[in-house]
Image 1 (cartoon, rainbow, N blue to C red):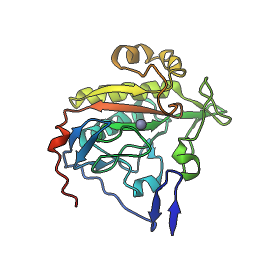
Image 2: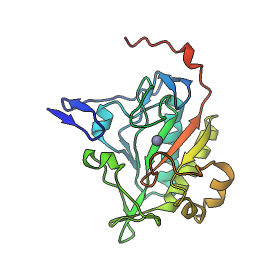
Image 3: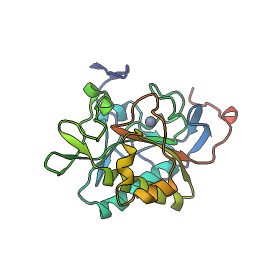
Image 4: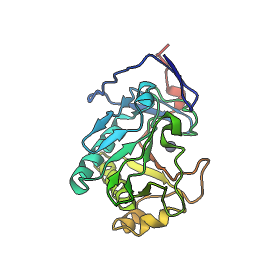
Length: 238
Ligand SMILES: [Zn+2]
């Protein structure tokens, strides 16, 4: 069976199992906007308090990151499983195993860019999880209003803030940094009002302008890991 997704990819067959190796160290090259990745590792499809946005996207190899970034992401989820045990998180697009052009994104090229879907609550105030599938462009088509609401959900801003704080702290523990967070500037003030708001403003750099695509249903995080020059990348996959 062939499935033409809204992102323009053709998927053949049905099932692909991607095993995460815990031992491989990745090397990044160039920048998030023009880069490559050696020994990229895939994020696990799911864990205690998180899940990937799409099995199809996993099968397409779209959930690879630098190994240190993976460790940071998983450590942050572990922290949140203790501090916010009822909250479910969902990650989205990251990048290819070898990095490189990652349409339709402008970055995500060297394993250091990660998209996270916003954690949400439903109308009754219970933790929910955004539906993400090929018919809503893996969730990227979901539109929140300027107060962070859809008909069915509202953004759990305290959970977003706690997640970003946990990522920042885990990054420090692994000796890397967060370069920037891209999130709709109109929604950022809701983060400042949370318990972790002051921490975020002190320690993280947030986008000030709206970017090429509205970041309301997801927040994009770029990490800083020392990378080699792109000119030294040797493509031995062919
Ligand atoms: Zn992104």
